[in-house]
Length: 338
Image 1: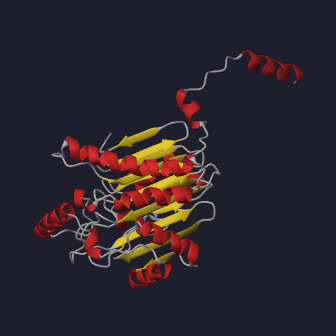
Image 2: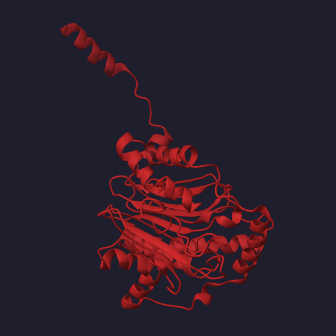
Image 3: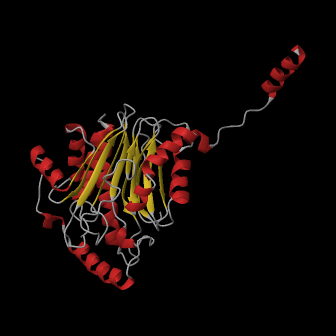
């Protein structure tokens, strides 16, 4: 027995150690901070001009810079997520805030949520009509009430109480969204749209952000104008913690974009976190499984990062507007299928 043990030790000492692969080395990197955002699942129109594509890139870069600045200065992940999403809500090219899609009544109803991975606290608002930056009101729900979700007139009353910025509903309108709405109304009437039909390009659009700060805290947020020509009062996954938004310091942060009803049915964002926790999967494995095995092809996509700052994005649509940065110097802007 003694000789066997000695042989084992000696043999092991002479076995050459294989060098770590680039993937192994990358997986072991712990970033001081990281941020990832999206401007919605989907690809640019085939006839988009170079100027239109660049405008989208510029919008993503401006939002990424806002969040990156917060984190690099030692700010919190919650502040970074809110700052990033406010930029996207103010950009008319994205379906959130100014630039939100029209509902079936020709008006705008906005949804948003935010979650703190250090406490599992979250806040959301649904169906707000006059709140300039719904992500800010969602954060107030989290910090100033004992609730998670406020909707409709109640959320509007809370906005008045909190003195957040208000604007007329018409100020969210753009000519681009009106033209899309008119086109969609005609197409849906002609097709007699079915409940379970796959996603169409006009049905995709949300913005979101996930951040990890220097303290190791993860936050996630999502904001949207919903689906073009949606039934008035419809609420998708964006304001719902566990469906479109989730954050847990022990696992990951997630923000989703796509057919909200599907993300709600599968509690998609939380399911990714739970797979990491209970099956000990990586974020990439869990996200791939939920998007490609649980949801249908074309249902949408997610962005996320884990507690080490590893960033992922997974989508089954033709593309996704997305961007990422971290303390290693990464500053990455991508649109479509890039």
